[in-house]
Image (cartoon, rainbow over all chains, first blue to last red; front, side, top):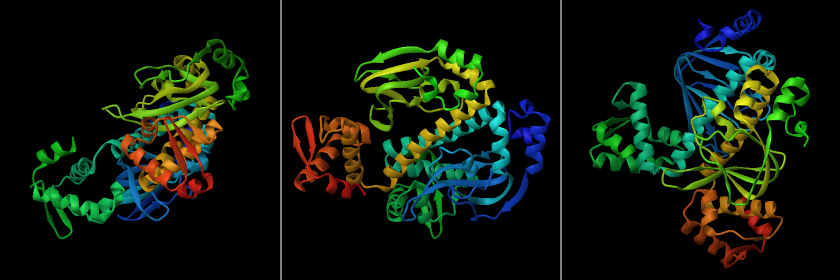
Length: 218
Length: 218
């Protein structure tokens, strides 16, 4: 495994800093559907995604969910080690959306290095800014986009991630991604189906007219 | 002016780092209503709020607004210098909600120090995490709270910031804080008025029953 692919500042770290990261790292596998990290009371560690797909989401007090962002191969996850940044006062959960191979660096090891290494601290800053940007993009979508646009975008993104026009996903699961009740998802999917954008069958949604769906999403 | 009040890591900086911050700092005054920073194409600099009240907000393509957070005396603002963090891909605007006295540290000076100072980079990290937490709190409110709760919370917060039960604020301006159309604000205020929570007059909203309003907000 090549750590420098995950840490663009790798050649600015000292030999002993690199050794500390490499020697503390642990490999783990997660099955599709498994929870990797739940809320900030756990401090799972700093994650390097070797393969798979991870969903980062937040949960309401009564269990509703909304997807914040996805992590794919080559991505790193900071918020599973959010205990090392004391001003983080929100909870993020992570689940595996596909079978995933992950390397975990313990939060205390990472924090100790970050405290004295300006390159690592600045890299962490860029990471956080990048997730912050994802979340700001989400706010803009929630605030200014109507639900038909958001659903159309979501279906196209999913199709892209799965490299397939047929999505095996329940209406409830889509509701959990978008933070909307299942009924609202079902109603809009039926409307899309009437318009010939998708076709619906038990447990699957097939995109029939991607160009028209893209037009709705914009 | 005491820089160590703004920088908890002040005593971890070297003499020359401290001098660079102090000697580059410029004092400026902004009138109530003035725009301090518009979007990320400007790089206004790192702001230390000496007095006043600043509103950070984001704007939709067609000019709608939603308040992200407020900055008060003793706060510092990172995103007016977001040009120094390349992964920031969102726009934040800042306006003075009260007459404000601000000290500005140029972004290039701050960035140069942050690149080599682990304490300053870690402080910047904590700052970003703190704003990230504000924005996550906003997402949770937008996603899971009904509009009556959000409006009741907003009126109580305003009353607290102004130390007054009478708020001189237009329905349109409340809409810009909450990212909602003016008509929706007016309708809910009329409902609050019918319920005896507030009284409405030209250009002002008076909180009549703060306890009941607090109950609505929870």
